Image (cartoon, rainbow, N blue to C red; front, side, top):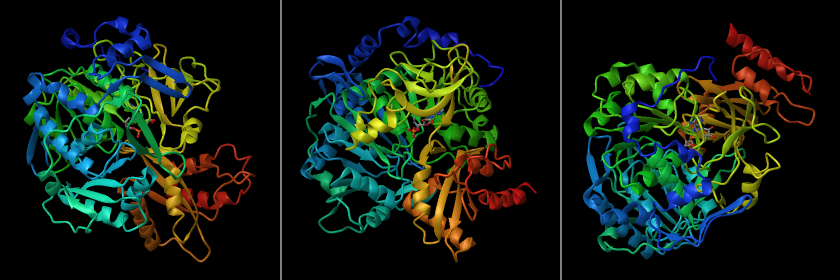
Length: 639
Ligand code: WT7
């Protein structure tokens, strides 16, 4: 929390036309508020009870029936939006494609019919391993049309990470593609799939979209090209009415153990929370051109690329690649080309732009922008100010949105016409959300004190449970306090005005470029190498990525820290998890500092990794010798 806080009042021209501009909305009863929001969706059957709360299990809108793909597509077809652009896709090669709502309807129906023919049913999860292309959204919506939960695995995950998620979900059908364009190269998507499926797995059928015009090798009887399956599929497929509480999807996220958690989201509650936050936080209107740069493989891509915009009948831009390909003008070129009005991105991207320099955004006409958003990590006041001034031309409110895979929807955020902004703060809970910064006892902290982010009342898009693991759900999120409060795992402070300032994770999870990685996952991967006796990973601050992992390694006897070993360990991380979680530095030591009970003292490692030779209180240290190598390392580093 900075000493001097600047406050930006909502700009009047923005306020005059905003969708949510009545401050009383913050005073409305939460359940009434969410009922009103649920009514903005189309239901086949109304719900009987808004909330059934049996802590920590919630059922939202019990008795109600609806369908996600119907709400994202069909309900717009009876309006003028029928031929409105839903997705404007820009490929890395400058190829473009527009899907109207009518086009989406046809393609989603066809894909749903293909899935039905392949035997997809609501008791099984379909895994989707695809890049940033509209066909990924089509595959997701096709699943929801027939009531089958999907599990999208981020395209940057390795074959092994994919395999683990397929098997945990027990998927029999995998939807993927023959490759993807990334930074001018072709990503080996189908090759990863084949590598994964060489090991024991539950998959019976693989459906392969064509993105890169290459003929993939097909395993007879298992692999099918989507184009040939689509050819015989009908354009009509009735949406299946789903119970509000039926699972809509599973999304794996890193936890504090090596095993990823399958976060399960419901249909009615999730769609209600996402539709409302999308509409009111982004002030999303029919003439907007909305662009969220997140990948579909993460929750931001699920909630604010796939579901949120389509539920609201919006026009969105989708870009296949990253911000530096073909050159560093790319994002600004896209904003100018399509007249993007709302840009939702990450602090990592913003820090990159700052480093590259103002000339890139300044070369393009960005005057169409009217609202900016940030998500994934704390944004520093400096980065916020830069985003506001250079990209937003000083006229666009910025919504700094705090939320998680588990919360499904944005929880803490300004409502742009109502909330004065303070750079670096995600401000306050959204109407209908009860979140607070709590102390160890579960009471709100006083201004200036540190505490933990907790959610004190259920919210509609909350996770239902962890896939087939209610026990881990209860233990991970609901045991921090003796009260039925959700523990988010983030530390924060609150200021005199009740504004929340997020400090970051307080568990063994690090946030690399907005991607959550469990240090345990890295450690158990490194420990698989024959040379490694013990590994401990720590997140350290990084100017662009926010945080990067540093690994402390104890080698087995007769093994030495050579470049060959380091290369092999990098390779192992890439193979088992994915390149994006690469270790930034290896620090070799004869022993890790431990307590009497044998627990690694991570605080000391944190200091070492940050180049700090003051180890603080070391009275609990059982093996003082362990500090020798660490001091030596620091000595060399500080020279
Ligand atoms: C963690 C959740 C939500 C989509 C992307 C990440 C951090 C998220 C903010 C923000 C500060 C933030 C938290 C949170 N985080 N948004 N606006 N300010 N920190 O989803 O992978 O589930 O990660 O991201 O630490 O716990 P995720």
